[in-house]
Image (cartoon, rainbow, N blue to C red):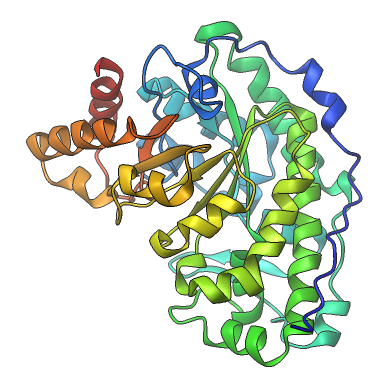
Length: 366
């Protein structure tokens, strides 16, 4: 196939040398599990644990726009810490958003309440791609400062809490740029990838470079793991994923291979893509709630840890249902060489924080 797949470019220094100065978190259950070692307990954290389901978050965010909060270091630090204090989870995840690197690179994007990310000028032609800015390392300084504040607060040793950095995967970020905002069917995105593959690959190659810069800055500042979110990859067939998306996600993951931190790759609705996602180069593959973890492990391969996969909606079904589902998932996770308990997607806004606290306590007790 004559598709041109450019290598991602990044202005960030390579972070491999920074690994030696990382916090000593020897014995931390999360890091043991993602490295396929024997943790002292099944570790647990929740996607979107920091944010809208917490009353203390809503109080703190009053009057502050979402992207402004992400780029205010002390505010992002405090929001990240809130669920660690409340739940005793085994990992913190940096409070940020997948469009933050676009924003700081100079691309016109805002998060509109009730809608999501909205792009001022959608990217749909080769000229649009050529006009995209790169991400300079200095622009990521507020995010890096938030990471440094957090690593000073999260402790060391087996009782320290690892910090996960993250970024959106090139496909998911591209879907916002091409559609101009959230989309149910991704029709413009799919039309571009099929009708003009050279422009498509140029776009994803450019976004892979931005993603690498963003993640390298977080790693250099001290995060202990990174997660690459491909939230919309489930809209693709495996053939489309392998041809149009996987090379760019793999380039990002490969670009972090010697950075000294575990790499997690997660998508929603990706049960049919798990074999390919297992080949993309992450150390851990996140699994949504649509497929049992033991089945997912067979698809992903025996050399990867898994993360997941309680349906976020089940948290509204009462304690007996939640307890039974948690026990089932922990049991199914034993089929993998490492298991991090999580939801199959993010915490829903109306979730009772006490139910999340109950899940953490039960997982730890098992």
